[in-house]
Length: 196
Image (cartoon, rainbow, N blue to C red):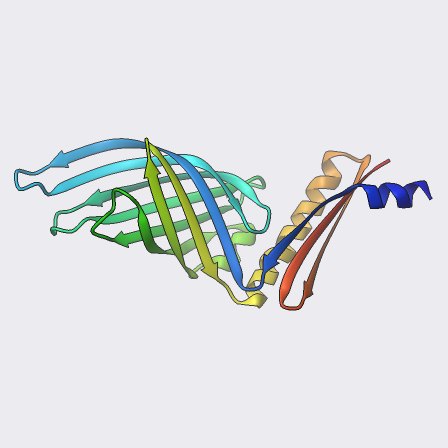
């Protein structure tokens, strides 16, 4: 009876993941490493970004990126290479591009995942949309990807195996149960923490 009560009282969280959607939010500090302005006002600027990210599957990690904003052709163009690393050390490399007349205040663009390790290997070659805002040397970026259900399920199942192994090895007195279910075209990730 005591274990059932503990089981019911220690529900940690329920996270809904909508079918076919993968979302990443990143918060980064910006450092400008080079800035050149030509006599005709065309510009070329290089920068680096360093920060944290979280995704719609409950994963978190660090992100490092570097890129350029240039207006050598008359219109501003943005290109950034980013490397996301999660808690398990798995990495995802992506390139972000935006051709815009208003790069300074933010806006949308497209990205593609170029390479990945671990669970991220399933996301390689998928294109996404992103929106980025820049304020006082800080950047906030949201990436949204439409990914087939089968691929998203592979990412979730890969994550489940790592998560359960990691939790059991961290604390033998903490039982974590992680279940993934697909109900009405939505993936539901449920975790219970039971302490004994």
